[in-house]
Length: 339
Image 1 (cartoon, rainbow, N blue to C red):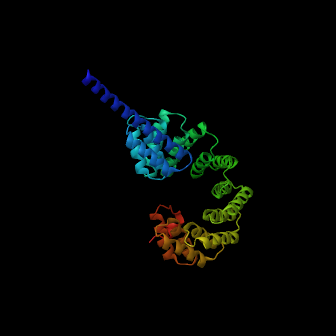
Image 2 (spheres, rainbow, N blue to C red):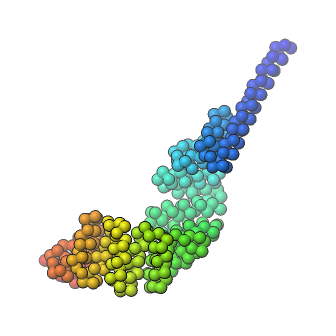
Image 3 (tube, rainbow, N blue to C red):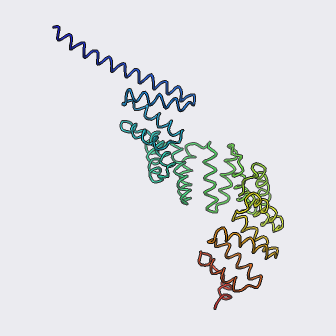
């Protein structure tokens, strides 16, 4: 009887110790959650780690640790903790979070697969559709990006960034009216950024709506005078109005902020050309080609300029350079440059 009691007491003590460890781990985990709610990520991560050191089976501590690492931009440790969590749990949130880590690390195929799988688990994961669209957009697959942004909008139509990015896709595809509709919707949902106003101005310019183009480009410049792209849009609007002198002033304002902007230089060269100031045009095209020796448009434009300066050999040389880089030459140019 005595030996039996001793064995019984030993088992009871082991069970009590295990229960104590579980309680200690759980308390540490809850402390971590409290710190995380107060945005004290470092302290939260410390307590999640301590809870796992006591009880490595507390899977939710792995997920919250992963989330902390994500906030701290430590995507490698984020992935490792997600993998530990997913040994026993697979949720849409954790698959989506893994996708975000892979996205940041440049593992785009894995990220795309994770976003897709997150939507399979939970069809209402609008952010998963959105970031899939971002990957599509960055790879140049605008039609697929539009599809994913539209799916995100069907779930949550209150995110201005969804409309903005879909509008950018339509803009890249030359669907300017559709782009305008999306940019206006993003504007109504609170996006007053200079980039949005600039894109609106560009699309209005493309649809020859000069009044709205001028209005939006001026608002874009007022919002952020350092946003260089707006100076180019401003110049293009003046070009549409056949005001080359104003175009040169606007592009020169942009070049004062970034003297090596190839787009501004190329377009200012065109404006100088249109005014008959061929020497200034040539100087701009020369600078573009020093900055980027493969710029096909600059070769073509410089060829036109050299022809006006009666440098036929130089013009033909530049036109051939443009042709070798994908620009289709007009028949008269081909005939002019025949040996």
